[in-house]
Image (cartoon, rainbow, N blue to C red; front, side, top):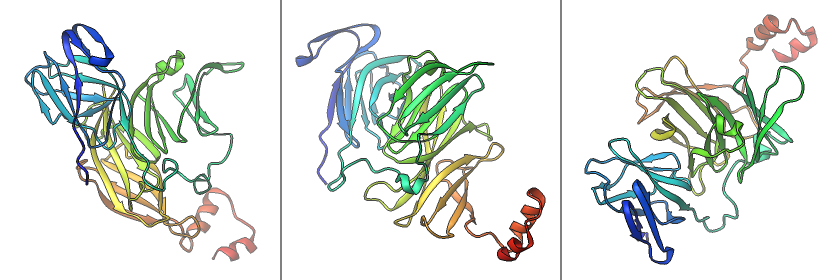
Length: 350
């Protein structure tokens, strides 16, 4: 494997920094001046140089994702671009909590040979064709996705038409939405995006946090029932294996203070046609429930119950086969909920 050359990003906390072709940038005290539109691939070591970072390590925050530094001193910081890093704003969070802006950063993702588009969900398999198929609300506003890629926000009214607030056209197909604690969580075939609902409502939306490098179909976000994590626990269910891989994942994050911290990943070997769909976090116990199938056609559907007591190493606690209704289950259900079918239908079911 070819070794990636380290990238150097010159920053300074206070003072003036010469940036070569980019000219000179004057930094105000307590701020950071850096090279705009810096780029690096996943796995690349990036060096941040400057002054006033402090001797105690803080974190690098890449588009809302907290990345532990590989090295930290008062004048130099190094970090490795993570596999779930997404392009966007980058800043430093010092040990004292200060935020030092560093401009924008692009994570380079090269398509593998033979791949003509980002590997994502197959709409025919997903069963989601249609002009509008996703909607979520916080009780005061409505968030909906139409055409798979347009995210619209409307204010609800007691009577009359809805009040339009904003519309975003995304470069990815959206699969699921969830509103929690004033944030909208969105997953798609490129990754996950998070917005402050207030920003969507004012028509000036800015991504609060994002991750990339996976094709996700389901998302859930809830407070930690164990009370160990601040903010929210977030679970992302990967729809299809990543290009060239044979594993399906469920990735867990902590979302607090508008920033994501990766807590753990459940991964398992999957069949060529196997897919995962929805994910639900248990509000009372450290568990996650994931739906999936082995193939589009057939009775091989299932639910996985994941134990997440140790978020760093989730495990399968139970697998429930759901593709075949056992003898007698449907009869009891239809009698209790739907009344009695005609006798000729019952005979066909037993």
